Length: 306
Length: 255
Picture (spheres, rainbow over the protein chains, first blue to last red):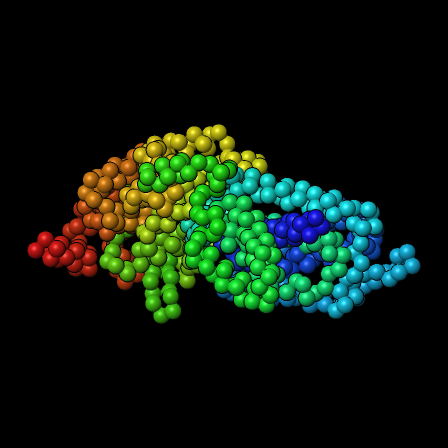
């Protein structure tokens, strides 16, 4: 039972990470900085509950707000560069964040023990959940309430004019400018929102694992963050969730019996999926409510009409 | 209404636009013609601010807008279409018009209204534009799935969504059939009746001569002539630079 709950928790956290990249990807930006925002969320939320005795909710909120502020500040200079240069710039930022936490030594005494980040040793004993008697079920439910709220918010945003504007910018920046869209404002807003969602994911992650260290927030995590929405497809927020389930359940858990061969197969399967479904698992359709549940006939009608 | 004052754009050593001055009066349909590579599209891009100018000024309604970013020029009333159609192909026809409602009036709405759904009046305007462009039955199709002529119509509708007072049409007739051309000239005239001023960049001479009030001719980035269609047709320099070449091509094509 605990295994499945743990898996659900991982899926929840990674979905938040993937969604943070999803909203940025909608504007056509490939950001490798999401792991950095995730790290800021993790460390700051952990510090709030462990060192200063915050309740979990304000801790998460504060950490996510801080992550979004940093994302906003990074957004302005970083989004002036495009394509590969943006990847490099955001990658560099992610590494700066990681190395910052590699160097942070800040401990305070609480209940007779020294707590706080210890540089390379990491940040141990983020034990808010066990100390307050949360069971695995409580934690899992808590995570999924947040995940569902975020997905609803993004789904709502997707259907709104703001969602259409993000996609317009993602498709053609020149045309978007010409119809009066302020590119900088749109891209930085997406980045800020992405930073907030990544911060949420990170702050929850730190509390479920109780121990974080800089190595977790490496390029690999940043790659996962953008791989989820790309693998899932940008047509709908559900795509990202689907991709996380595909990767975490199928690739990581089901293939566990393959031992060391798994990692090789892992890459090969992603390549295979991207070839079979080049627009992601969900495919390419305009974002609409429950489009993926609706009978196929309607879609085919639309195609027949063209 | 629009005034270019010794406008220049150099790409390295190439003088794409070289000290071009012209004035478009309110309510005019102004034609900008010239052979391939003469700087017409560059001029359009300078007017809507996609490139920074090398020297000179762009004045709109008497205001210097040379340094204004592109998206602010739309709010000021300048909208455009592209030579190679640039629709948001991942959005539906309806959404293409929806995201383009960024005119001065639209900007006065509250934040939520503007970014969530737009207002009722805006939606009514989209309906009207769909009607005007005869795209009513295509509203839920992805723009990328439209036929070529429909894409051209949608792009013009998208430019009109912000209710511009000034419209830049960059080769709107490219690739159109005779039938479509007739509809296009009717639509451009209808635009003027709505009160818009039009700068028309075009290769199709019949269309330009038919509907413009005044024409400027560019060659190698320089303005070589300006006048009424009749004057331009009679101008020797223009014949040499452009019409002569076009006439020869037509002869070759018909032969």
